[in-house]
Image 1: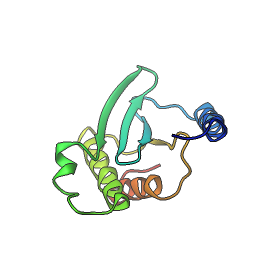
Image 2 (image 1 turned 30 degrees about the horizontal axis):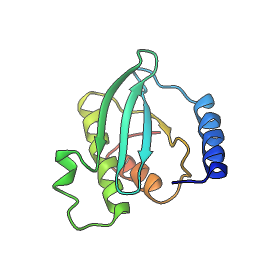
Image 3 (image 1 turned 90 degrees about the horizontal axis):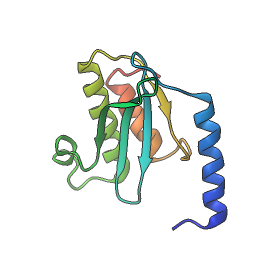
Image 4 (image 1 turned 30 degrees about the vertical axis):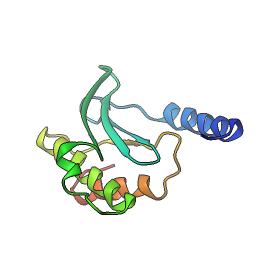
Length: 121
């Protein structure tokens, strides 16, 4: 678990990021959560307070494709998966919410995977 100092830094960073962005039904917020083993992403319409779509490394459609791959490659596949789901719903643009995580590694790979499938942000 992160130390109190690290957690305080993460909380400040998350608040700073969230103060600047907000999602809508037409352009939802793509929120990322990263654990030590998995990565989760959800498209949130903040004006309605609802999750429109979600994907993660434990989702059935992604899990079958990521056997024996590195976590960065798995994150890229999660990005592709959420992009396909949103494209099927007719959503082309989102607002990317990295949360308290730096735009590096798995978070960046997820964003790159979503962009590869045509999602704009």
